[in-house]
Image (cartoon, rainbow, N blue to C red):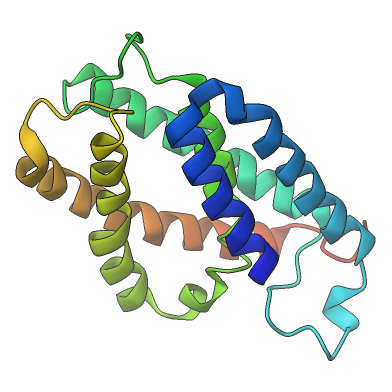
Length: 182
């Protein structure tokens, strides 16, 4: 779990500060993340590892893909509507898509404590992710034409809904996926 949150934070800073140049590092971390899940295929039988949900590597890849695709669609819509502007890009940059994949890898691991509480999902979604965009703007990785306050209050309800959606998706994928076959 600690490696998971460190990997995400390293990816966040690297991608926000260095953009596409940091994609190979994040990609290596994501490959390592999925490899660790595949290597520990009997995690769900391991009594010593109750800090993460018991997903197969295939289920993890499906979750990462679904969350990443959703994030790309949402951020693309926000960009097309003028909420975000990216220097030198008319659409979202590739590094942001990779940041979505990196975030997705935390859902069933370092953020797994959110899985059992819809209220916490709503609250965390309302507070923290919008600040991530504001921080990105302070590093000049994204421009916020409507300013920080309006942008925050546009993003907060969207992210609250996204967090609910992501954890509902996790629950559905986990129930319908074959988590015993790796």
